[in-house]
Length: 252
Image (tube, rainbow, N blue to C red; front, top):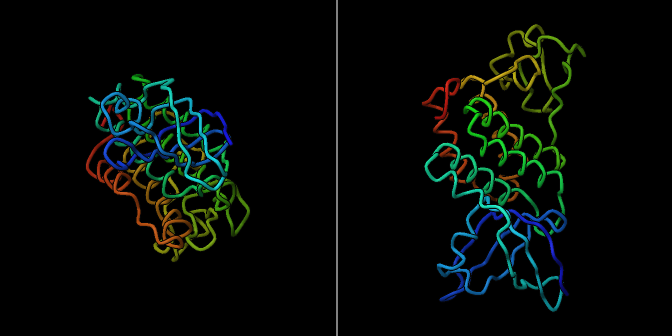
């Protein structure tokens, strides 16, 4: 059997002397692995970088087989970010989170489109970190929702009010207002203003850190832990960057 699809490179690992196992997030066929003959060589090393967009042809005798890929680069996303370590870190984190979270060979076109939106935000030099990093947090929120673990941040779980939302219940994933939290506030997760719809423009580092803690908590509880997967090292490195840097004026 054979299919053709657009894809975003998530990861590669060497296989034998000259080949590589490529993991693509494809538009119509989900996260899908395949063997690339010659993928460990110099000719394809630039093509098979995480985040790059490719056109892929996959062939196998049976659908459950690993199969082989023939790939053609359609847009180099990684190379322009090589001297922008912060943005490259976000690209690597998004690719590794998608690799760890998405079921194999299950189509999730919404995640594919969200990844493209993130890559566009990272490529735009006009965006300070307070813009593209907010897109990254929303990418993780969208990934949770696509996999059936969406958070309800639209109104307070206690009162139904839409104003003053400041926290998220770690049990239910629903928003809670500051007035309703009372003495239980220290047991709740902080809901940053940009996710509650009360902040425009570049997002300060403190709010981005809160956003990453929020999505990270639910990714760990709902996806990584149940499947025996550790939080990807690339995501940990991105979180560490935000722990020590400001984001309102430029890059981190």
